[in-house]
Length: 411
Image (cartoon, rainbow, N blue to C red):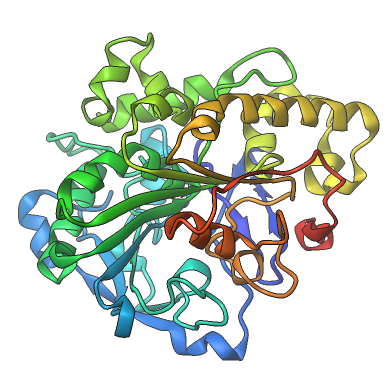
């Protein structure tokens, strides 16, 4: 199976869609985008290119400096921080990483000078009621390994730098120097590949913040399953193993996991990390995540006759036997999340909308038409958990019973 560079796409009208490469049949992508409305144009935030990181070897795939966007907090949020790790798939071989190095997902030279802050990063109270006035940071993703790579040697034949872990460290150190060292509250979050990075780096983040700070983590659409596909294979395992090997990620995965599992690259799957994470953790995920369905449950190689093509594009077209398989995948996810569900500090928002990445999309995070569980939007549920207003272990009923999903948005 040749899943060279899996990335996710959310179209401007908040259609959550996955683009198929015409040559390989694999899912490729662009950056996640959110519904743009004139009320949030004020949230365009300038880029900080961290030139000082180059001396530390903390560079993007092409050797350019890493970057982030920071919008300062104010009022009651002046000492609160939201750090969001950008998503955008992975690269698992030289060709896919070389291709990526010529884009904003592999080089700061190609990143836009400003970006829109929406969802959990919005600066408007009506759109982000609990976090609008926090210091809000978007760490740009330009390494292709969920911020875990660490290879010293650079092959002159390809000039690729695998330094995601160093990027993570350098950017966090810079943010600490800019006031995060005085944080009273901090939340590490991210979506897709950034959601996976949130699982991996959660305890590291806690360790770098002041001991007096209340530190928590929220992973969105990052709970990728080590699951069999419809052909009975686990091709995604091989893909993850290639990422970990190429980027030298193993040394930065928890030793308590890598010392017990074989292959050790299984520790790139969040389900094997949950019991090790000590920091309070909230998981936002759809139980019917189109990226997972298209690449883990029904990859192209497992569907040679394209029986799933329509179903993957629009879940409302799935026939009963397909919905039964999808429900089985949902049940597997819920089972794998048992540790969070039973944890005294953990939180869950597992809905049944056909969506990938919901916390950085305004219409999904907090808006009149947002999906809800127990009459709460994702923003309200996360806020309830952060500020301990209630226990939040919200798991949706199977598709298509949830009328709040507005699945017209998702196909």
